Length: 355
Image (cartoon, rainbow, N blue to C red; front, side):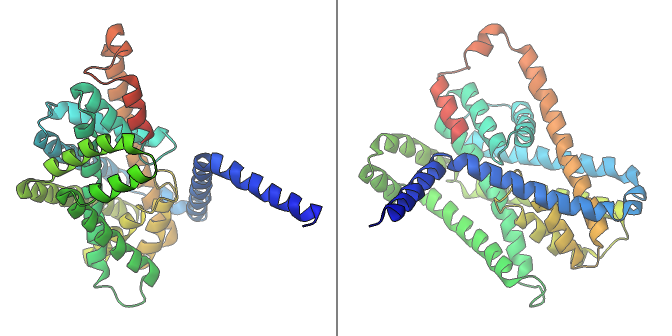
């Protein structure tokens, strides 16, 4: 082997090792770049037709925002169903405030799951039951996303062939079927056994007991068919409220389109947000609006304005969450600020944040 070949292989190994060590940071920067590029694309569409932005009927936007707030309230109540299944004593007012705080952190943190981690930490700190708190957040979020994917999958069945790229349609179906299978496996406890065996084999046996507590919490919270039915219905209601809010924004921006064309496209656009290639779906959501609304006759500039307004309404949720977080912080005593409520140690909180 020549010296140059050896140096080349050594350099390759060094680069791979460097990439592995910085994988999370590289992925974050990649997602930030994707968000910046896609947002720049959407903003350029709006800038090319500034008249579209000036002609918006702004009087309808506050009502749209109130509907999105109501949707968040429904989601907080949905979370409360899982919380009550585990016997966690958290009042709805606390859950609603924490949901808004989660929206705040989802906006300010460079990750799409930061808000869910904050909710899990808050519920665990208030009750001292990490597994139940974490599973309630994961199930609430997961089943909410599953209903979004289910709506997209259902409407995709009735689209004209070729209207939407086939790979995306297949991805939507796969998200729904995979998510549904995951919920069934968690409810029946089928997933824990193979995962525990694998963890033991690779030397992570110390995590098995924690995984067993989490699996028990999943099974307990998914046990009641009545509760699952309520969760699905509440998810459908929350999605419907968001769709109505989006339609109001559309009417404020451009001429109305039939609901028969609007609902399937928004369902597919919302499903596209689940693809984790950006931070908090920034740019992905806006580009999806431009693409899917364009399929039913909405101009690119109008769709871009609609998407940007919906993004600003989301930031409005974050503002409410920031106020709630500030109020809670100012009300805490120095002792409460130093030690979390309940038997939750600092390392436990850090693991939930990192997880």
